[in-house]
Structures are given as C-alpha cells and as structure tokens.
Length: 157
Image (cartoon, rainbow, N blue to C red; front, side, top):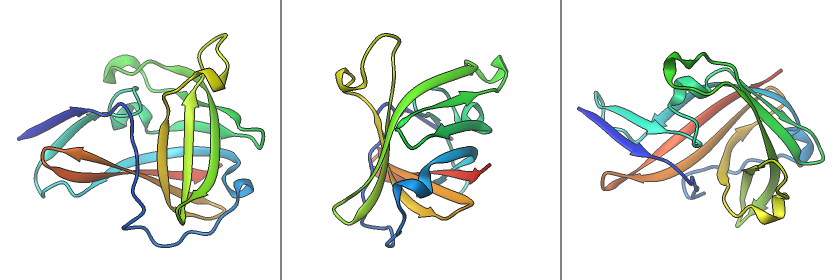
C-alpha cells in the first residue's frame, strides 16, 4: 500500500528528543544531506511525501547546504530531472535557537527581491543530534491518523 501526502510546513515537537547542546557556530558550515528516513511508519508500508516543497527524498539526497554565520545561506539540489527534481541553488535565511528546552533549526526560502522579514512561510526542525561531523534534524507531521517523524541526516563537509 502506498501512502501519500504533501508536506508544506513541517514543525516539530521536542517531547521525544533528548537534550542536545550546541551553539549557532556548530551549525554553521557546509553540510550534505545524505538521506531522509521516516520513523513511525508501519513496517512494510511505503510512504511518498513531497518534502520541503522540492519532491521526494531522492530529490534532497546529496543536496549541499551552506550555512554561514550571518544566517543568509543556500542549499543546492544537483539531482537530475528523472526524479522530478528541479536542480539548482535555493537561497535561504536560517536561524538556530533554543525554544522550550529544544534546539531548533529553521529557515525561509528567499525569493528574488523580497526581504526575509516579508516572507511568512518557512520550515522548522528539532535538532535531534549534532556534533562537529553530523547532524539529524527532525520534523513530526500528522499523517493518516498518526504522527510520523521525518529524519534529515547530514554530514559536515
């Protein structure tokens, strides 16, 4: 059985995460999104989601995320079009902070000629784990009468 949904805005809950201690400077740098995995999906069931308004996990796998200290970064999708992906660089405004005891990474995609403060929509993730070489961001979404967790698994370049 194939389940499908459109994930437009992702948000997170910190109830299942252990304490992660990091600083803004730990997040800065170049990261590769190695894989996207799901937790809470029944065994044997396939799931098809549109992630971050880009496409499925194949579109995001291998994307390079550049996160400089000033908060104006980018991510680049280099996959070919056979997966329905649109290759290219996306400019973002990102932040990292602690919210209700959980560490949060969020970003907004910047549109040409529009200031970040004028963009209301964005993406918010709980930082499940982070160190000098790896980072896991999570978002929990309601899906077919349950909650699943989307895990974005990064390594630092």
